[in-house]
Structures are given as C-alpha cells and as structure tokens.
Length: 241
Image (cartoon, rainbow, N blue to C red; front, side, top):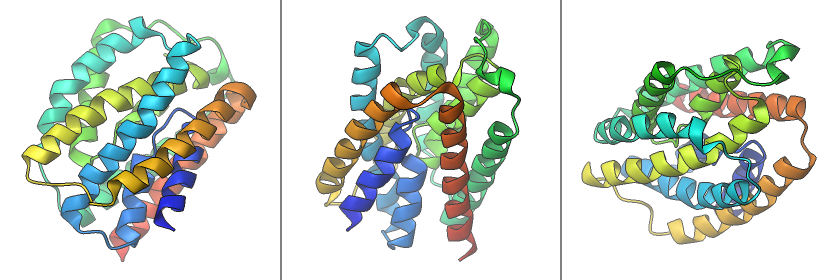
C-alpha cells in the first residue's frame, strides 16, 4: 500500500516537474517512519523520480541549461551545508508547510500575464536564489523544486512549463548532494526504499508524459499550486499532531 501511495504522489508531482519530496515526507510521517530514515528515504526517491523526468525533459529539449547552470551550481554547496544539520521534526514540518502554503497562494492569485514569455534572469539574482533554495532544500530534505518553481514563475524568470523542466534537474542535483549530507549526519534510508523507488519511478514515468503532452501553461500553474498547497497542509497537520 505504501508503494502504491508513493507511486501516486510521484505521478501527480511529475506532471509539473516535481519529484514529490514534501509529500513523501508527509506520508512517511503519517506512517510513523523513524525520524532518522525519513530524510534520506525521501531524497533517494527524489533522485529516482527526478532522474527519469530530467532524461525525458532533456530528450525533448525543454531544459534551458544556460538558465539552470547558475541556479544549480550556487545551490550545491549550500545544500550540502543544510543537509549536515538535523532539525527537530515538528519545527521542520511546520516551517516547510507554511512556506509551501504561501507559495501556493501566490501562484493561485497570480495574474494571467505570468503565463507570458519569461524575462531574462540577472546573474546575481540567480546565484542568490540558487544558494538560498539549496540551503533550505538540504535542511528540509526535499529536492528544492517546490521552492524554486514558484520563484521562477512569480518573478517571470520562466513560464510554468519552463519552470517544470528546470525543476527536475535542479531536484536531481540537490537531492544527490543532500543525500550525501544526510548520510554524513548519520541518517540512513529505509530498508524498503528499493520497493518504494519502483513505485516512484512508475509514477514519474506516467506523470512526466502527461505534463509534457496534455497540460497547458495555465493548467500547469494551477496544478503546481494545488500540489504545493496539499503538501503544505499535510506538513502543517503532521506538525500539529
């Protein structure tokens, strides 16, 4: 049943270029996973789901690597730094949940011109954004796409479709580095992660295809907002238990 749940989460998130780290963590919290297994397990599942999405987006030439490069390079060292820190569970869940809910509201009330062509991204702003998102990603144990995508769309640095394509490789890189930091901090993934990974891969395969072929810019933006809001609400509920 858990494997099916991980697959469904991965499918929904992959439609908008996300791997599902926040919902993976919320599901594991509800399933009473040991706290030292949650972050590395979520990061491993992120790697599996984001690797497939990155391959498919890249094959279709949807990833703007020039735009991604400063964001990703700046994020990797701060992700490692954040991953070496272990937060108390309730603090992590509440803070991350509130941030995701705010991001969802911003996307939902956004004006229609956010679906217009993107603006050029200033180099200093890209580096600062990448570093900040990277640190939060490592600290919380998610790949960072749920934080990056709303910023890209909100500032019109990318359209919703472009943000989805940029999120997948960003998540892959940050989850890989974050996993190294989590292991260094003494955390280890669940022994059943290989099974959950099969579900995450199956979901990512279907979800990414749906996102590329059938979702419009507006649909992508609203689905992303729904995903962020759902994950944020789940984490806040977990923290309040």
